[in-house]
Length: 114
Length: 115
Image (cartoon, rainbow over all chains, first blue to last red; front, side, top):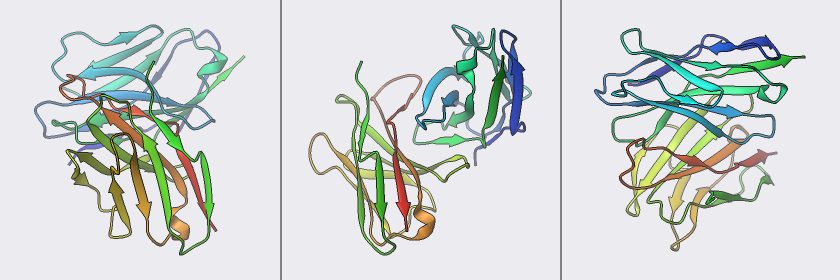
């Protein structure tokens, strides 16, 4: 069975600073993918970034980057130059080998302070 | 940009009533999903659907739940006799065939309140 663990229930960061949100995972699938989603207070799920298990390079999307350490089974999200609009819940999720479902972590609430 | 839509955005129903949540996936997508998020908790997988049948379902998806693709565009989730604990945000998602990332595109959600 797949499992995602996000150990930080809440994080604070000063505006314009970088922040790392932790995610560890467990799976027996040889092929899998990891996603990060942002959920603002309005409730929608916004895709941020994806990392495939066989990708050689860490994924980057603008201010978002994923620190993927396969041996440690971790996929931490790094947000650079935080903005007030980054305040939201952040979920790490993993797809199984066949893409039949996503398994989500418990989420981390990020608050950006001005 | 194509997007997944869901209606209604908010549904209030009484315990024991049947509800149908509606989703219009992205038009060329062939895989469809429902997820549930109880307030303040994580998102939980309910069911996946492909080729007019359920591919996988979670233990949450019991006999009270059913899914249907009644026509070429809609994908519905029916809860036969709602319970208080069914109150949650319900997300529909879809993805296309053959994509390497298997990325699922989420709709905005339907907030279901059972009173």
